[in-house]
Length: 478
Image (tube, rainbow, N blue to C red; front, side, top):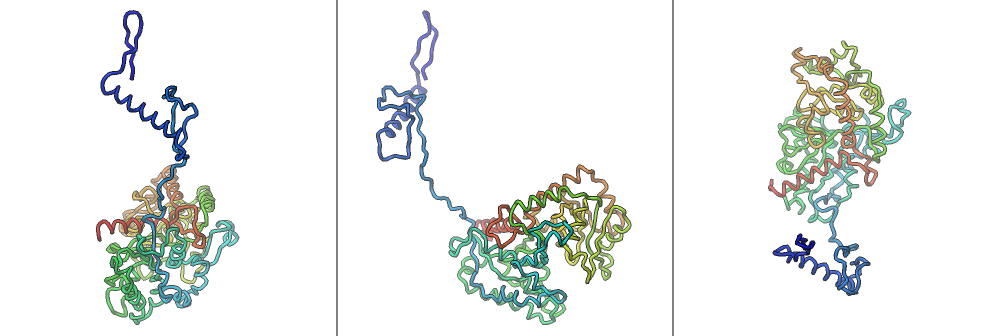
């Protein structure tokens, strides 16, 4: 660049010296060459030059010259790259649809057939069903074990399905292990509990998709906890099937509503709630309803006693709740309707700051997600209820949205939950509640009958996590 130096008689321009001078010349030459190319070539219609540039390059104003690329074609970027999923659409119906046709065998106490309607969501609910507690749309009487169906239906609407296995990052197996075992849980003949699972593995082993990686890129979903699928003894008194114990199944990624701590191929996903929105507008409307709800109760509990297990923490919690003027109780009894009413549950949880979530038949429970859906801060009493369960869907800092009280301290009388909860200020409670409300979209399963919801739900989080796991398996080989 030229510089000015002060000399006697005024300022004079001094030519640039050294390397900067040559860099300057190169830049000017490049600009002039580009201008000539643009103004004279008929073969580059997508390039345009500033109108101030003339044919006479002697009069070119370098400072005002400009060149823009307006419609330069870009290389194609596949939005589904590394996201393709292959489904065994030709899986024999005995592994899924036939189980649904046999719906009356799914429960000894309940007719499950109505719960299978609406793609597994169950009968539709209206706001009039709960005195205005629920919204007019998006609410269903969903059974807690229905995830096998709901996930499969959502998988069919996934936007990156492929029929070309070579493109797939993961393979979905539409087997319903949770519903299958439910039919035979109380059967003394263990062969009936194991039959379909063993037949599935034999079918898979005949497929080239399985042979390619030994099933390590396969995944499936169980709507029942894995405790129902990991029988270790071939004795009639032993509980459940042995599906997860089958050696080949160890290679399959299993999504379940509750995993075992030792299950390295098991990953917990949320229980289905009663809310299945078709769009974000429904979610936001519900979030605002929850946020503005009046909460007269410090804490609440929905559940029943375990009289045959007197040392269970829930029995102590029921007694302490009954003694407190700050606690509201909804008793769940066999044959009762209180806890089977979505509006009753939502009303209770929406009126409470904290919701007690002790272990029941297993460590985790559906009520965790029902209460969080109502903006209620969950209180856990065992680390297997949440800490090692829903890592894909819960923040790593559990204290940001929940409270943890070790159950032994309650049982031994060293801690009263009410005393612990009273230590939280109104500001702290509000902050935790807001975090719970923020999480709602990723804790619910959107209506599987819609092609694609405009928000990221529990299904999306699970599928993205599965794909991430598969990519890691490809890299590490294990």
